[in-house]
Length: 265
Image 1: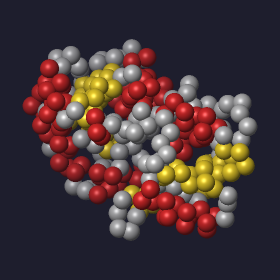
Image 2: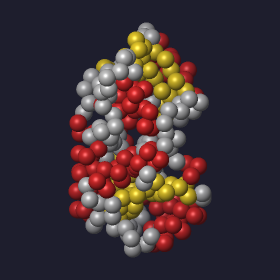
Image 3: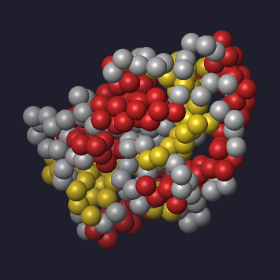
Image 4: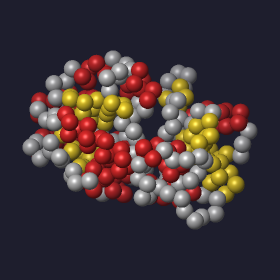
């Protein structure tokens, strides 16, 4: 099976496409350039085609018609609607922000003729998408693993500039020595993240949704899972976690993902 991913979110499409290709199912990702993930997952895996505009992306996909057996839309409803006429079996993956902000979107996605499967990436989204399949977010455990490096005696929290004060309020309540990093101003490339996560005593996984007031997401982020894979304890949703859940291994995730897709084609 050949799979085309449209859009990406925190690198999940690039990671999935990489492992699916290793498992014998060639997969690529296409995105609009100014919406690509800022941590350069596609640059690392060399499997993401960047288009300058949505119109260009549509033309690229139209020219690929017949080259792929399945399309996966990652939070890209507009293009799912526009390309539905291609009659290619397709899946839609909800990554969080769209569905939490617009619960009726799940019904609209399922009204598209060629959508044969829907996925959500965190368990809390299932309340908006009762018939969706949980897609366990993958971590590349060949890249993220414990390293023989000296750890600094400090905790780390990475967030967006607009959530820094909210994160500090949570951390101050916990009364720990934690450095809060603005990922918008101090972006770390994806391939450098394992060394960063190995170099700290702990990782504070605090993720907010852009609502008024900000909503604290009750799920561990991909960065938190990556920290666990590096052997770094993670504080998330008022709990400490010390071991990496192997169901998030990219090979296990992608094998299950492919089984689901092949059952729907």
